[in-house]
Length: 286
Ligand code: FAD
Image (tube, rainbow, N blue to C red; front, top):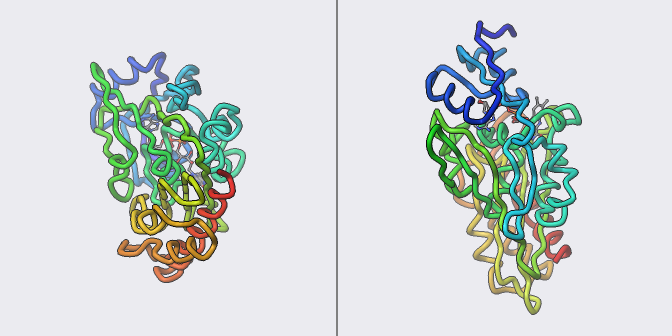
């Protein structure tokens, strides 16, 4: 439970953090809320020689307008996201997901940037970002690029981020009309992480589904879009029977995780049940 020794630097700006990250590429780690990194260091799963603390960069957590959608600074805490009036209005699905994370201590310290970079397979945000078609803005010393959420979550604790890159913001497009959304989660009773988390954004016109995006987390090595369920819903009615038929395809063809708490069959069944519940709740929210 004792980490190996490390140096600590509190960054005064994003540029300074990026310069240090480049100079010490491979040896340095960014410290945001510390709620994933510090436990990993104590277990010696991670042994950086330098911690670059970005926790004190106030503007790094700003939440604001983005062409009718929302831009969220990577340093925004889970509590800041859960309680933001702008996010509740324009991306309520994300506020719902943030509200389910851990406990109040975790939500007051943990950040969206830290959660996304860590890419725990049971983290809540990835499913929500997939359903919302979010984009991540990442920066390295001297350059910035945009990564679609659908390209970001690569594998177990693996993302599209390079070693010297920092997530600086998450952009969520403006909500479409006639669209409802919902995030529902079956939590692990001890950790509160998702055993199955299902995020749905659905557009309903004339009683039929004209567009839908479904993201799952907790089920596999990385969060994924469930195109099988989406295809089964698109163009059809959104009554309970049709939704149940579509939801029965949930997680089909995915290599599911299995552990002492939830085996593959159990996770498969959770996926079906939570897909049905989340789709119906999203339809009710249109
Ligand atoms: P840190 O721990 O500081 O950093 C995590 C990793 O991300 C490090 O590798 C760090 O270098 C890197 N990093 C940090 N910020 C950036 C950035 N801007 N750009 C690039 N890399 C960066 N999560 C859930 O989703 N659902 C839960 O139910 C849940 N329950 C939890 C319960 C407990 C008891 C604990 C301790 C954690 C739980 N978490 C849960 C994880 C929590 O959400 C963490 O806050 C989050 O995973 C990491 O965010 P952080 O700001 O603490 O990042």
